[in-house]
Length: 89
Image 1 (cartoon, rainbow, N blue to C red):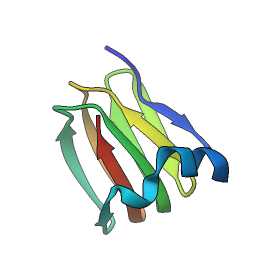
Image 2: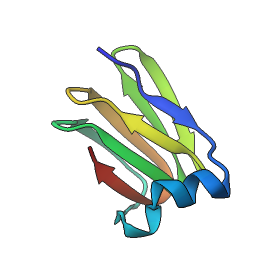
Image 3: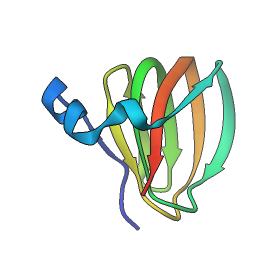
């Protein structure tokens, strides 16, 4: 299984990804299990999350662009309110 990819894109990359047209999502601090039935790309405007995956812990936060692979089963531990946009590929 592929791993979660995390990077800090610059403004040019964000414009090329066209994130302004992606769907918004917010979440208060909480813990929940999640399974990705499609590949998801997301960009976090705010927040801090620890994600437990079969491959280990992944930390994401403000300014991160993240790719979650299809089929990933994980647990989200939202530490600070998340405000993100996402796109299913």
